[in-house]
Amino acid sequence: MRRGAATGEVVATGAHTFFGKTAELVQVARAPSGEQAAVLGVVRNLAIFNGFLVLLIVAYARSIDMPMAHIIPLIVTALLASVPVALPATFTLAAALSAQTLAKSGVLLTRLSAIFEAATVDVLCSDKTGTLTCNSLSVAAVRTIRHELAEADVLAFAALASADSGPDQVDAAIRSEALVRGSPIANRKVLRFTPFDPASKTSEAVIADDDGGLETIIKGAPAAIAEGGPFASEVSPMVESLTRQGFRVLAVARRSPSRSSLLGLIALSDPPRADSAELLKKLTSLGVRVIMVTGDAASTAANVARAIGLTGPVCSPGAMADRGDPTEFAVYAGVFPEDKYRLVKALQALEHVVGMCGDGANDAPALRQAQMGIAVSTATDVAKSAASLVLTQPGLGGIVAAIEEGRRTFQRILTYTLNALVKKFEWVLFLGAGLLMTGHAILTPMLMALLLITGDFLTMSLSADHATPSPTPERWRIGTFTAAAAILGLIGLTFAIGVLAIGKYVWAFNIAELRTLAFITLVFSAQATVYVIRDRRHLWHSRPGFWLVISTLSDLLIAGTLACTGTLMAPIAASKVAVVLSSTVLFAALLEGVKTLSFRALEIT
Image (tube, rainbow, N blue to C red; front, side, top):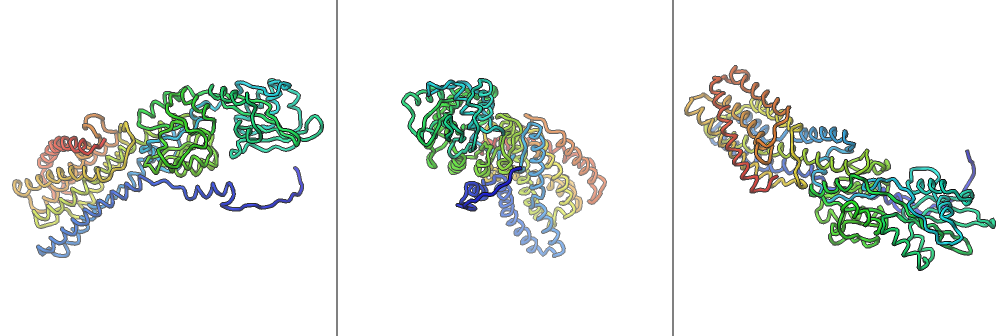
């Protein structure tokens, strides 16, 4: 243990410090939640439409002098029919099951709503090292500038300006290669070491020179070191030549009170991952535009981009602008962590849904601001806490899995949302139609409660249903979904009114029996509606999941048994229940045709 004393001067505190600015950005960075907007949109549309209908129903009930003792149960029934009680639970259940699936693929969700954001992402800003490349750096070439120095000497000086421990891949590669080649310079004592600073892009070591004096060894980006003194005319072409080959180039310089000189260049190789090109094509086929964001030189980044098939112009360091379309560039080179935050904001201003990769603490604001912040496998704890997805394995594979699983989950939730809108529109209108036809409430609160129980268990089973991911990014188009649900709800309402009319005028049922008939009609038609709308194509294109089938069979058995035995309702003949069930099959065929036409017209996929 070392003891001692020191004096210091505080020059900045709080938000004025480097880390304080980062923390402040993390606090204010927020991406709009598509899931919250969707839930609020559904509830708003239902509240406006059904609230108006409930008022009309109550007004009509008063106009026909219905006793208040009957009106109150009617209001309760209408309110139960209007509120999508299982909406939040279904969203949560679907997300939780998807999170469990993704965990097996090495993707961890820090918040469940991230799975819905993954479905809507259309731009992915991917870092290079460790995601597109192997993150296995090795020294590929060494160029000496001073003729009296050998390549081993340049490596030895660079090793002195490298951390002797820690996870830094660059320092580890240089130390390893310097140890292999060997040089007496490596034995010099480091008196003071300054670790790599992302802002200056350099690291420094103060050592004793041959004459007993002090000199500083600087290792870092060639452009950063060039600021301390001009390069010789032959150095810049050497740097350009190495970067065009895809190498990451570092310069090594020596500075003393009397002189400053460049010692040499070190080229580091980090080859692309074998699966990067294939996964990049997969993301492109899913409608996701990939942008490489890296701190490396433009030539190095462009070479890697070409190797993996990422085509498009390169935005050179310092040329990033807040205005214009950032997707015009395929590569952003020389990017600082704060530039990532600006890039996310610029993309979101153009209404893109952004996924951003990051690993450092300084990446936290960009990860928090992005709709899908992705902490890569080597990320710090700060980056992981700010991100919505955490990858436990390197590469793009986890991101592809998250997007595909997100779109499957979105399709399941879209089925539930459409079904909820259809039922809520249909049920409240049916209550009004039943009141007009019979002069009584066609459903009691007890029957409505049973209807909700059977319906919600069915629709919640959609969380584990088979679903095909959309080939394009999803969008929460609540207005469009509401229009489609209104069309399908009117078809369902027509069917329910038709069955009720047969029960009243053909079978001569009394009001109690009509209520039972209305109950089983709504239960059976709800089953048909779910199976029709669960696939955006035709209902036979994908088989239903196990739990959906079990829920359907259970609902049919429970509803049929209650109706035939007269449990909690008036009994009706089993033959009449069978007729309603058979009619529901014909109703499903009609609804399938209407769905196909309306989904095509409204471009619901």
